[in-house]
Image 1 (cartoon, helix red, strand yellow):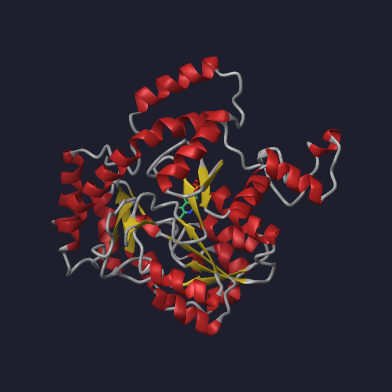
Image 2: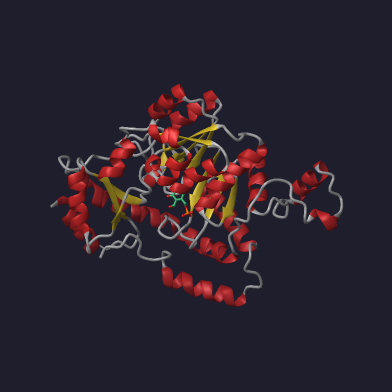
Length: 393
Ligand SMILES: Cc1ncc(COP(=O)(O)O)c(C=O)c1O
């Protein structure tokens, strides 16, 4: 069976050995210096000023929306656009925190939101924020999307949980929005078992995210930031200052175990994404050539494709269903990410009016006619052959 995910980490044995040693000797396992070191390493890798390390990609999505609400940049009842084809916990925080989640369709040949699709939605709804997903390592014309957001004063955030390492027009995905989120869950480009991050260049937003991450208190802020916030709220006693809660927060902290693994795994990140990229071309070129059976996914506009998994969108549901049968006991497959969000029960329950008006979409077609198989740096040539046999013969 060709599995979706083969191991928890790249170079697993070695990483586990180092982890055992670390656990035996560590004085502290809750958030500490390993996590802080990882934040510096990841910010440098992603070429961003700040990285806020959290316990999952979902937590990163929740934290960024809460931070923007705390700052007053958005308020309850505002409209937030999101990619109709995404993962549940990209949309859920928008709904949980009292905002309207407005679905935006994706292009069939990139699986991502384009400036064209965004413009169509803006004609009908005034958006305060845009929180789109860079799906499966791909993107559409995200530079144009950024321009529209700048023009219309829409706060632009990227969910980059699936596209760590992709470069478009000379810039890493995750660096187009004012902030972006990442997941380090098993099977993603880099794993810390569970883990996630928000990256931004905005100092104030980074401070707010640190506050949101831990209880709404100021303990993980710099001394200068602590002084500022304590003065603002006239907290001048050390007895109370450690237990003053300045704004709405959660506990979304990772542990030193995640931090240590992050610091070990980030050393392999470039190697991992290069192998994934090669796998993508080895597999997708012969598969996408079958134009009578599958839609082609466009990728030539992307400078470097950091592939997450390999999507196959069939020309009919019948072809897809036959493939599902053929893959049984041979290749582990699944729907494209979370499918069309507007058809998920949670969305119909809370955002029915937007679900009802979202018909005949590409997201729906992908939901009905798409599937993906995994891409990981440990795929062997035998496994690639099995995949090609099933998808091209
Ligand atoms: C686009 C997207 N956003 C968010 C998440 C959530 O990340 P996590 O599993 O780390 O909570 C995922 C998970 O796969 C995802 O694909």
